[in-house]
Amino acid sequence: MTILITWGLGYIGSHTAVVFANAWYDVVIVDNLSNTDIGVLEKINTLVPKPVTFYQCDLRDKIGLSKIFDVNKIDGVIHFAAFKAVGESCEKPFLYYDNNIGGGNCLYETMQTYGVRKVVFSSSCTVYNTVDNQPPYDESTSLKTINPYGSTKLIAEIILQDLSTHLGFQTIALRYFNPIGAHPSGVIGENPGGVPSNLLPYIYGVLLWTYEHLSVWWDDYPTPDGTCVRDYLHVMDLAEAHLKTYELLKMKDEWKSFDVINLGTGEWTSVMEMIQLTEKATWKKLPYKLCPKRAGDATSVYANPQKAHDVLWRKATRSVEDAIRDWWKFIQSQ
Ligand code: WQD
Image (cartoon, helix red, strand yellow):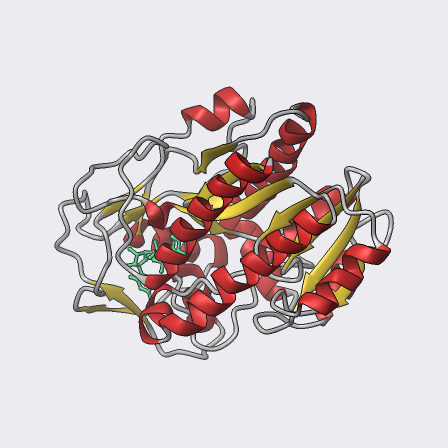
């Protein structure tokens, strides 16, 4: 079986490529290298039994994409390709709409041309209405986006729902909570370009003295220690869930439908707890400063993971401590 992974040299894509290749899939990666570097390819190939195939191609390049489908008999697609910085999406909405939605549409059209119908889509918990609903969030929670990044994920889900209804696509959208960590080998992890907006990559920068301190976006939220809480999921649990999801799509070959599944642990960790866990794992003091709230931050976001347990017969098997340990091993190997 040949699986196409878009932006498979990225953080989650690379870990997913390793999982699929070790499950004996032929992995074809398409990436335009706008949010990663080519060095990740060589690292992936040290972790898999058979080298993955790589094409540098922007999904909006219809001719380039068609050539890839011409020479590879693609059975299904894991679609990650998207910019994902919430703050950046507010400053550059057209970049997000063009890349995330425009690239996806070009991919789906090419899939239809070549008779490829199975797609696992990388969606996000940012589609949930966290203003009018309290966590834990399950798949029936109402949807409302508050930034262009989240909107691109919601719009893509709607498009894929239409394609499933009218063109026979088989789609499962996986709504991630907060992916963290790295492959246990320490060979691959998260290499964000530019100033990271996410918590752990920024902590990474502080530990490596790129930044003086961590800004903790305020501590008077209605939580046990006053800082926001999130559902942090080990990236390897996330990657393995993509394999389980694709195996489900393979079993339901006549299934012409669309479904959504949360990928979270159902547990939550506060910012201060993440600082304490990082200090414990690294034996380093993490300097931080209390700063005003970040616009758009929800107090508390965590999943009800029951549907993933029922449909994918899987639970997260790794803890936040495991993720921080694996991530620190990756950082030290850089
Ligand atoms: C986590 C917590 C901040 C940085 C992410 C992704 C989004 C989506 C959901 C997948 C928050 C606090 C952070 C810092 C801080 N995932 N923080 N200082 O906002 O939950 O969104 O998960 O689609 O793509 O962006 O994650 O890591 O930015 O923040 O205090 O320097 O850490 O307030 O409470 P967030 P995050």
